[in-house]
Image 1 (cartoon, rainbow over the protein chains, first blue to last red):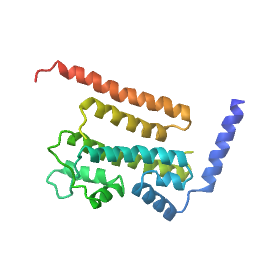
Image 2: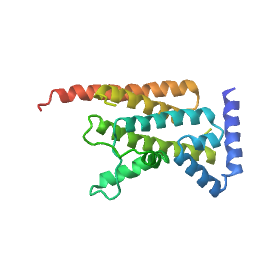
Image 3: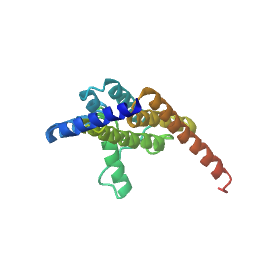
Amino acid sequence: MAGKVIEQEVANAKTKAAAGHPPILTLVRLCIAAWLVPGLGHLLLGRKWRALILFASIMAMFALGLAMQGQFFATDSVSYLQTLGHYGELCVGIAMPGAKFFGYSGGDPFFVSSDFGTAYLVAAGMLNVLAVLDCFDIAMGRKA
Amino acid sequence: MALTHFPALVIFAFLVSVVFGVLAKETPRERLVYGAKVFGAFVGTAVVLGWLIYFFPR
């Protein structure tokens, strides 16, 4: 019984490998979509529930970061860590420029929860990077 | 919104655990178990480290 299941899995893997991966342009589009809106890549791949959970979790983390007056770092900072932080926050996609557009000033470093908020903002970006990589793996047939 | 350390830690751990669980495992049960383990590891490690540094002088 177990042997048949394994044989079936191997056959499925071989079929997937033989089918090859999608065109590079499709992969790039998918990854850009997944980066811009957390969960959108999974939605395009037909993983609705996974997309919804990722979107809700990552956006909740980002929104809490904003509510706690987390800082938006800039690229012209003297500190490399802050420059890295800027790119980390940018990984959350359209939410960061969106927050700026709707009047978020970039945080108040003297607010009591500001450091937590900054950690939330950067972590939201990093989680979205993981979501983009997961989306890429699914599209390549490496994951279900 | 002002949060103290512990609620901020718990909310952070919860959200990260949800994402880790969803991304790392395939079945709902595996996700739940893995997410719970990650959550416990986050909170447990923070509490243990918090008590360890309690004994260091300021």
